[in-house]
Amino acid sequence: MDNETQTLIQTQPEPEAKTTHCLNCGTEFEGNFCPECGQSAETGRFTFKFIWENLIAAILGRDGGIWFTLKNLFTRPGAMIVEILNGKRRKYFSPFPMLIFSLTIYLLIASVSGSRDEYNISEKDITTELESPAKYEDDIKLIYTTAYKGLQFYYNHYTTCYLLTLPILVLATRRAFGKQNRKRYNGAEYTITVVYSMVMVVLFRCVVSLVYLFSADLSSTIAIFPVAICISLAVCFRKMAGYNIPQTILRSVWATLLYYLLLGALFVIACVVLLCLALVHHFL
Image (cartoon, rainbow, N blue to C red; front, side):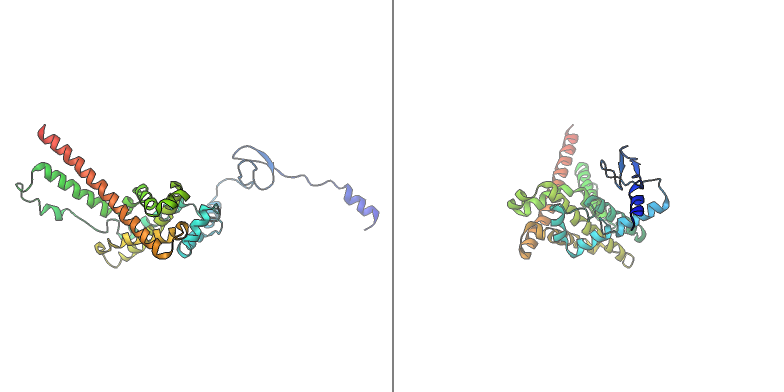
């Protein structure tokens, strides 16, 4: 390269850096991402192509993708939970959106298979006992009927009740896995782990709903779900709690039993309250 060519290259003006106006926070910046809020410089109007690409990325992407998280949840759940609790979270889908996604899949499958009220518990079992008006007082009959309807709702909406009782399951697992782990992990960290275990149970429910396509009677499967809860807790808490396999299984069984005992206690309390209200109404 001669001196004249080198001089021309040196005197050529450098290309001006492209400045972007962030549509989210209004910051002027150079580069691919806003330094203030992190939004991409390529953010534009919504298009069907944009929606499709983001949907595929959310499902299949390794960086926070649903499929990647599901694969790890069923192949190495304990290690995945420990990584998430230790801060390695970017490559995994967040637990609560993951739960919403699994619930969406369950509702779609249950709607197609017709298994949303799969146990089909009716009032025949109770009305046969209450056919004679003289057998029970009206107030006691009211309590008995109300208690039965509570059980009816629980079994016919098992998944809904399971999710609504998340705080009870967290409380049971914190108690079952010992004082040492309660000091190591706070309630929020237990909640994250329990939510991922719930995802596993809901997806198991999806499989059961598919079975409903071939068998319209799933009443015999009621006992399977406590087992599914126990297994999901064991595999999710295995590495987090630091116990060996037999200890983890025993503590998971205790957590599941404690969960149902607490549910039963709440149910009994509700029945007692109803009975007291009925007695007050009777004497007034």
